Picture 1 (cartoon, helix red, strand yellow):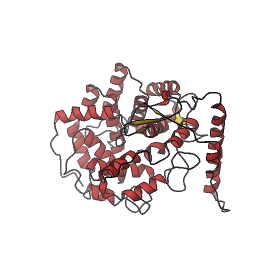
Picture 2 (tube, helix red, strand yellow):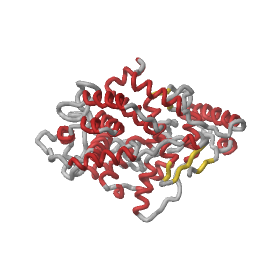
Picture 3 (cartoon, rainbow, N blue to C red):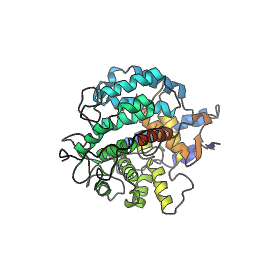
Picture 4 (cartoon, rainbow, N blue to C red):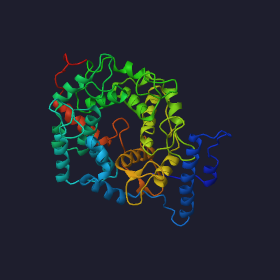
Length: 408
């Protein structure tokens, strides 16, 4: 049975306005402008809800049509993402899965075959057919294939070659570069561990020294940076925490500092999350920051602390997503005034899922029809898809460990 959450009152929201204390900067002006745009949306909602008490409403049918159209045809506006085509597949498929939309088998097969064309003969996946393999594209392709959930999709993944590719980008200190001779940051570690654990090719040898490198990325702020010595960032913090969880080493980070930093990334008036200190709210951080909480709850439980409710304001986050991030014709966006896109549609719906699902409870803002499916906070795939894939690949057994001289 879902629990219905109350909206914040306009009086509550007003009290949360940003105060520049007489020091006007570009940052403070932008913050005030965003707050004003969000406040107008929330004030309008407070008037309309008197007529329709089921508001705010998740525009599921509009989002479904938008996503299915994008899966078949993309506008020229996406040409800059031509080297990220597995990502486009993953974002669309995952968003549809969260909405509980089933895809025809023929379309599933077509997507799986396309992703197969993105797989490199050397292992891993590139951003498109014939592209060099890249850890980010590999992560997106594996997540998309796992979301499809068919045996055809699973069998696209050449696990022996994938393991060779992971060894080729592994570094002596346990970190991973995004592609051969590419940049090294915490995204590479997370992407490598995620695909390896999903496909049952993870080994102690492959990740020797990795958790130490991840821990070194936690900053004085409490979050994680892309590499040691940089600024904490929501996306990197998600990658670092999730990677430690996969390794069973989550207890080695400074959990209280991470929790303090993450809690303070929720914007007081808007209700959504920012990615870094003194930045603006962004719908995608509903997941990047929001997903850290269920992982933190698990680690706290291991220490004997049982969390009885979300440690962030789940009603404010749902309010922001449903009121400020939906395009009337389908798709979701960063903040009021921005364009809709597939990326924000996927991650904002993922954040909505995190806000709605707490342990075995469901907390819904608006009508119960607003509920979306649960997402796995480590992989950002539906948990049933994760279980099904892991069972399939575990039955295949682990391939040989491909440690080789190509590992730098």
